[in-house]
Length: 173
Image 1 (cartoon, rainbow, N blue to C red):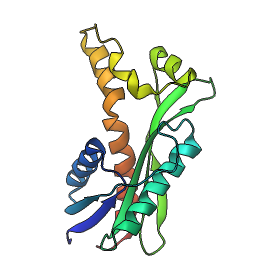
Image 2: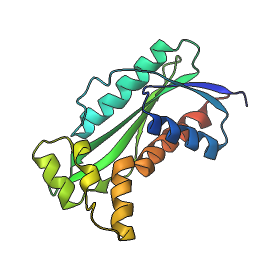
Image 3: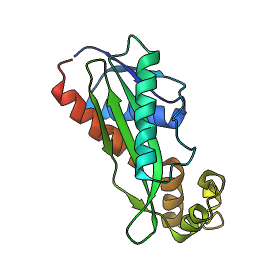
């Protein structure tokens, strides 16, 4: 398999690193092209539709700015109310290419603790408060939960892996 050129619609180091880790886990050799784009949605998407739109916009813009890319990936993390009116965090990852492929995959959803629920219900930006979650606690479960929510690694990697596998299995690189 050749080394792929993959444009990614972000310059955020963590998302780029998670994409690279996922590519390595799958066994794909790739040059990742970080691309500054606008998501076209709010900084904190609070619906599935808005999160989906953000990942699609990111992928499309990254592809258009990188004419040598084989395809582009857009990654957007967001929050959505479930049927109990509680916020769940999830990731949407989209791939698009020049042949007209455009598909999205979602991660599983994670029900946020009450601390985070209250922040989102007040329409505050979660990123400004997330590191304060139980910062005085030292138990491993609380620390794991805090890092899970801060870095969103597992949700991002799940959505990215799912869409990469869906795309790569139907392409002949």
